[in-house]
Length: 210
Image (cartoon, rainbow, N blue to C red; front, side, top):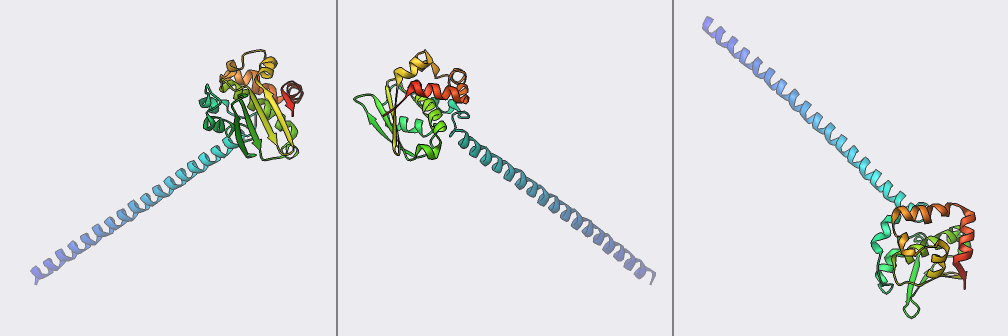
């Protein structure tokens, strides 16, 4: 009898020990799984925040590129080219300059080394000051980056303008190609356009109504 009791006692001890071990194992498993879930959730939150921030930054940059005062000139330096006859390059340049949100079509006039930009908008709807500021900025950029471009015809619905390289160079007093440097550009071209009186005076000297 005593041997039987001892056996039962040892068996109960083993069962209790096994139950304890299983319970501890289950607790550890639950804890590990819980920690993994928390880590995955945190990772998703961080990644989602990063994607949202990137999208927000991209939207802000696109908005910046539509205004001469906030445009990133360094982004269009890659369109520097010797020849205005490179239609895709010229198109890409103007689609990355202010007024790109208006929508436009292009025509090249090789006999006069001119580019015709047909904007799908009305000046009064866009804003006359913004249009003047943008035409000065865009024409200066185009002449600085496209070596043999001599004229730009900017056509809006109901209004048309002409801008010549020689008038741009007379206004700035330099060979316009020397402005194709980010620091020089910001100092000589972009920062000055913040002054509305300067915009009015330069537009009178540079932009000719057709």
